[in-house]
Figure 1 (tube, rainbow, N blue to C red):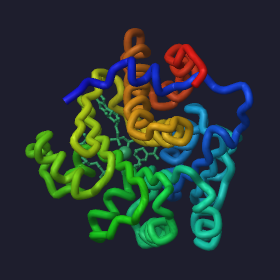
Figure 2: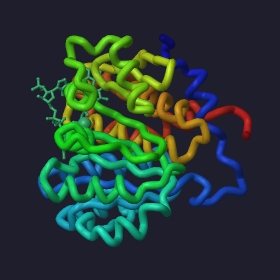
Figure 3: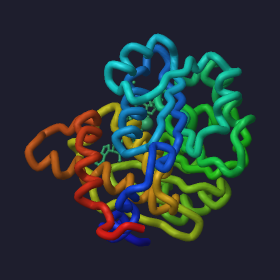
Figure 4: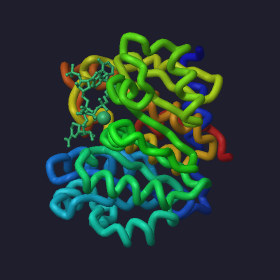
Length: 278
Ligand SMILES: NC(=O)C1=CN([C@@H]2O[C@H](COP(=O)(O)OP(=O)(O)OC[C@H]3O[C@@H](n4cnc5c(N)ncnc54)[C@H](OP(=O)(O)O)[C@@H]3O)[C@@H](O)[C@H]2O)[C@@H](O)CC1
Ligand SMILES: Nc1ncnc2c1ncn2[C@@H]1O[C@H](COP(=O)(O)OP(=O)(O)O)[C@@H](O)[C@H]1O
Ligand SMILES: [Mg+2]
């Protein structure tokens, strides 16, 4: 087991090339936010944009539209009930994130199945929150894509069948290999599993125990994976950055809000960028 180091982070966040444009930094589609979970998709979308993704499109319930644009006008909007739009647009994304606030009703299931049936093997698909619960509840087959899961311990129990008390590295790793995915098992001491490798996140604080904290992480993972070529290192760097920002804020705050973490992402990335252009 390896601790995620600042070396990984500093070598992942590259200095941006001068001859770049928004297309250089990835196109991301983010899907979720039923009418009662609009905050989740707004936080995920904002975290993705603030992490530097070039173009972010949010597929959500139309009830969230004005709120989404008030908080993050940089994100584009598509009605997630329009399955034809999902089908037509999905393959234009480098990265798709599905699940924050998606909900677990029939409509949510239909949206998830539409994504699974249309995603391509070359695309990166991040699966979080309700989408994980839906896969477990309906025993869904996973699509052929580059899969990244970001469950908390109960979502991991639902997906893997491993009770929280039995979630040892050995048991988790066996389940991860069957999924053929990168898995971020979130807790007060988050671990990242990929093939034979296991990383532990050195940071994190109970000041982070607020709804929306994982939605924010999922958006950061999407933004990092969209920009940085080594996908595993991008995931590790997002996990590290999320808690490192929180730890810093917690020096002076009893509670750290997800939206406060989001505001500090660009500053963290600047302080931790690679010193030479690559
Ligand atoms: N503002 C918004 O729009 C928000 C929208 N949200 C959206 O809501 C959807 C549902 O997600 P969810 O995580 O809230 O509910 P669920 O999947 O039932 O899991 C909770 C159960 O798991 C248990 N548990 C055990 N270990 C745990 C651990 N380490 N971390 C966390 N939980 C742990 C826990 O145990 P307990 O706390 O009761 O002890 C409880 O029994 C999802 O789409 C999400 O994106 C939220 O993000 C909130 C803000
Ligand atoms: N006590 C804690 N110490 C460190 N990190 C925590 C603690 N409690 C929660 N977190 C972090 O907050 C996030 C919670 O994710 P999740 O439960 O999916 O939140 P939500 O779905 O409400 O957005 C994870 O990244 C987890 O590691
Ligand atoms: Mg969550």
